[in-house]
Image (cartoon, rainbow, N blue to C red):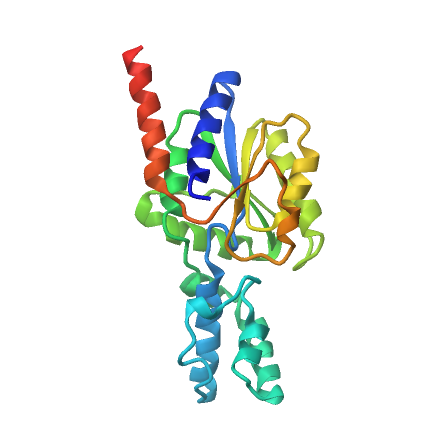
Length: 259
């Protein structure tokens, strides 16, 4: 759990040696992998209180969200909110959660993840691709949001390295996760790692990858598919330990200079 970033750095080094001169890519999911959606969920729930003059969520914090994505219905049950109000809250959440305003204001990255992405982007011939189940309809908002959180760390996310679901919300996500990996391969990137919170997505990419080149990393945050579907060769982690990643890359550079 603690050393998944070290595993990534070590794998990157092996792939650099094996595929010298090729463009290497580490592929990230967005929601609950780069971005901690609990912040968005809490923001939307508190906005319900604000707009409806209620106080249901005054004492709710990030830790009240469980292991399932956003867990809005679970929070409603936990607080024993009357069914009629619960339906209004769910409706409000579904209307507001993915609006341009909320995407721009309430999406927050997990600590350390943007630094990890910057560190990877600064390695020779190494690129970071984004493979998300979000639909194409929110491409512009997604890029604005990612670049907003990346700006302070000099991280730039570009349109050509973003693969999105060509269908609607929650349609064929697993299949399109595999299609995203294939998309980057066809653009002449050597995909060497895939980071996602959903076990079923990692399982599908594991079955697709016949080369064994793709290191599968499970972001052990929140997820809906069963943990038993995490492939046996995947590495799980929760904390994006940039110090561990930097240490390995720095040590490798020093050894290279000494040689």
